[in-house]
Amino acid sequence: MKNLLYALLLISGIACSQIQIIHFNASWNAANDVSWFDDLTDAKLKRVDIAADAAAGSEWKITVVPTILIIVDGEEEERYQADISFSMKATKEEVQEAIDEILMDQF
Image: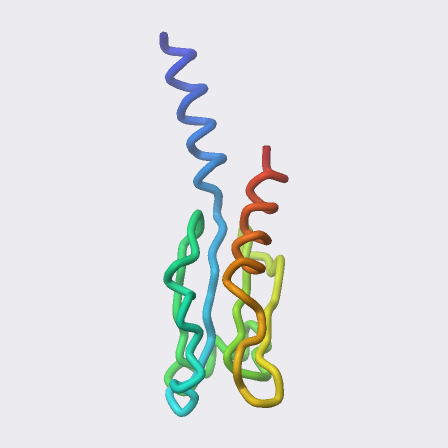
């Protein structure tokens, strides 16, 4: 029974891996906020306003907003950036598929 409990804890730890999705934008670009961001699943979601937190923008080398990063164990795995109109062209399905692939690769 004890071994089963350890196995379940290990599996749940893998399934709840350190996947973080960060949505970078700026208050002056609020009209182009990614509306579907909060609908992403299976990861910790975080929003950063680079106008208020320039250090975070610098740390992740954000050059255009909005930008969405998929971070796995502290390392950038995927990056989705806005086009010249400052609007995101990546879709929710595209980003969610990347998250799902990362999760599957961890098994």
